[in-house]
Length: 284
Length: 95
Image (cartoon, rainbow over all chains, first blue to last red; front, side, top):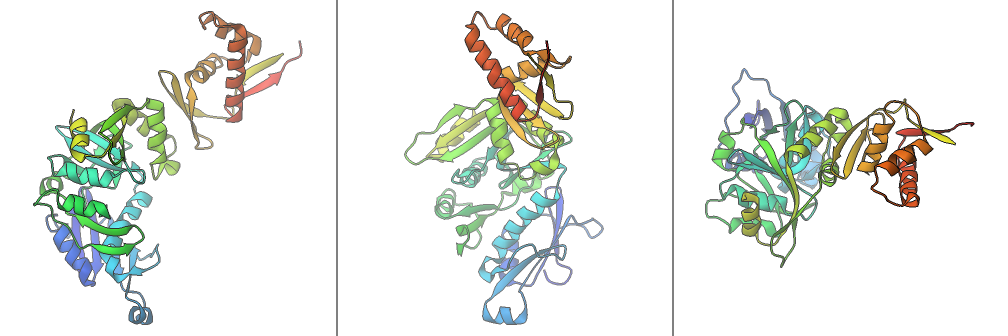
């Protein structure tokens, strides 16, 4: 991945990653092995580099710097977090540079042509629920951000590895034998993290958009049977706006797009302890 | 005597669902969740300034015999709320 780097197609986006850090190469091989390579003649949407900082710093403290189009927006992180930094940095790149979509902090999954948006407030367990759902036959559109087209209101897939943290890692690891998990990294700003490989079927259908029909705001609540509470359209819109990264820059198009999404969706809050129970409700 | 009018310098979009209305103020970029009564008032002001007394009469006639004091208080709250977010203005008129 050094030199010209590796260019891969993720959904409708083409990303070139350059790095000579071995843990990044291992992570990409394990978790991005099923993605198509971008043909040489294609334009690249995002140019990303991950590299060790200056010589002295490298010697004293192994670190990694993330750079997007030759600009390093973050302070370096410990080298062990290099692959995770690629994923986090890519989230930042999307949220700050793609403004033909309303970008909502949410997981999105689809089954039988009906997509569900699971906005992710802290402690919601959206990624854990999303990971379980995609291994029960749902198509992964995206784990970290819903991309809602300003043009047609459809959800653009961006199926990447699913980021899990702390207890969720073992919960999902034990969920299915076929789950492939990347390296576990402790002591990050988010605690212990690991990424789960996206299913091949979701990667292959990564250019097929979907229409949202339900928005469910999840909350993981131990010892609580799964239950839903209907949300009014107005409340749901305000909560969706709170979770929309680029709402302030989209202006009235952002408002109209999110309001149209609310219009076409059943809106609810869902509390759950058992993912199976939550999935049963969301399948209905 | 006061008259109420839409604030000509403020542009906004709104969506109305059942008892709620969400307003996006284009000039400030702020979004507000309001009651549908606010939307009802905004609709009344679309054709021009209206005296508060006339608005009260309109509200009373569509409020299914609610006590006048209650309707008047509701109207006052709505006017205050919409003024606060800059959607309407009130002007004192000499009689």
